[in-house]
Length: 395
Image: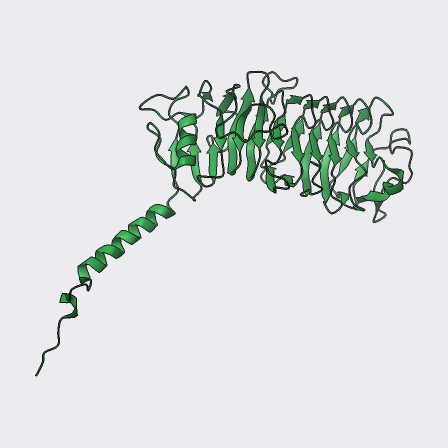
């Protein structure tokens, strides 16, 4: 009678201990993959051996390799670069967050945005270079083509010719942060715009979110959008989740002192949503000191729930200017909209709601929206200016 053979002794069959060991190694590997990395910046200056500065921390996060004493990023997980309550300047090259490396959070101490300050000089364009004649035409403090969150910090400039945040792809979230200078008139705002979003690929969709009491303030540009310039297919959301955000004390020689939402010629726009936002004390040497909406996609929607006050334009639309290429009822003044105290040099308008009289009814208002009418000439010569549910308030 032939005895049964021990299958574990057959050549090529795995030994039970090897199977267990292999499983353990697999679990260790999975654990490593699942764990995000916190990279603590422990020096404020330029890169130096034995320390982890801000530039090295970003490089470690986006390459997933250790740099000096900065640990490697984790890959596809959301890594965090942790800043202390201090000022970071002279830190080396510009901060470039490409799509590689996974999501990244750069944050200061929780609960405050004025203790961790990044002072941005003009360090030139990043490598690889995402720049062409339209995409971020000037050096920036932060370039982003990936998924980036700036949180609990201040980003300010100390050198001319610099943009605050240049987004050329991906997603950028500004949460409880200051971009520019909270003092008005400013000393350390960016003079090539606070936030500039322009695609480096035609019709490339991006996402820009400003929330939790963030301030885009004290910035200047000779183009469109002193505070925020959003071009083409970008979903822009500025909301009061976690605190009331503000677009204030920004200036532009183009249009849109606070925010410009502009078509890039592709005919494809994202959507714009403002909810519980203060848009105040912005200036434009052209149109729309508070907001300038000049989209080229008739399907795009702009929902404006904001307090828009004390903005000044040299032409028309002291508070808001709306162009003629947006779709019927695609611009909506929500029930939290307030427009008051704005003026423009031509006719002291609060709002200029569509430059084309043939499509002037493109604006919709919701119950409770309030617009101050100072002299009966706030609407580019048209009356009534809005189409809505019949309950808009005009004090």
